[in-house]
Image 1 (cartoon, rainbow, N blue to C red):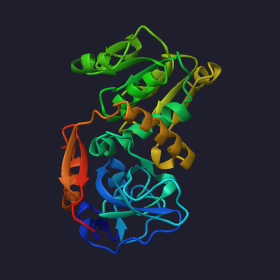
Image 2 (cartoon, rainbow, N blue to C red; image 1 turned 60 degrees about the vertical axis):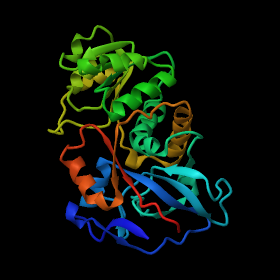
Image 3 (tube, rainbow, N blue to C red; image 1 turned 90 degrees about the vertical axis):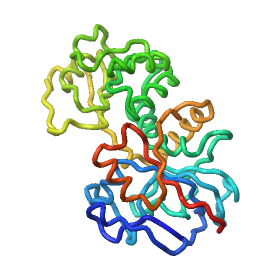
Length: 324
């Protein structure tokens, strides 16, 4: 089978596209004929060796994919040949990646694509959507009716946070460029705020604040929290440094919680998958602009992403369509 893989960690030139053996599935695995795999920043970290995780070489790159079931293991009960499915937790922790014509996926890490949902739009969405879902539902454990401020809300993760926060019954405020105000208002945002202005000028306080940009001073966010409020961090500033008033934080029972999806547990991923499929079936979370490239352009895709040349689009690598 054709695959995009590396034989050691390093630069983008380590990515090769060529023939690898067809995976042999275990009793609890499913063999999926891949339609497409998305490209995320974490893929560049794994390839470069910056994200330390168990890799078996040759290592197929990529972690998210959508495709069709072509074979099921003896102990698999939930999937059948011909099912359209997706995954978002391959390509790290000893598991081979998804940028190949065929992928062996543990059935517990697989989800059906809801009827009528565009598989390309779905696979473009799942990484940022799952990040948003786990952060809100499990890490922050948000409560219906509470107020959340999403900073940098017009980005990939920001828009997913807005949509999921609304579905979870939160009152949503945002910061973004003014040009995105109308789009955010149409998505149910109660208060849109210019991200060029200091967050302290926003008149309201919040129960939860999520900074997707890393550009807001941590102390400013802490000052905008209500009693027992929480700040969710999914990124850090380039300086990788924050200062804040520790006494003011803990005496107000405030907290700072960080999260990266690479450390999500299997139960968290499974719960998020169910939540995402509910949204996908309702036509939500599928608003990314997509740049489609063939699998042979896997190295180019990572280069475009690393150099910030995607123009806000999600990159999706399509596999060659051929009969097995």
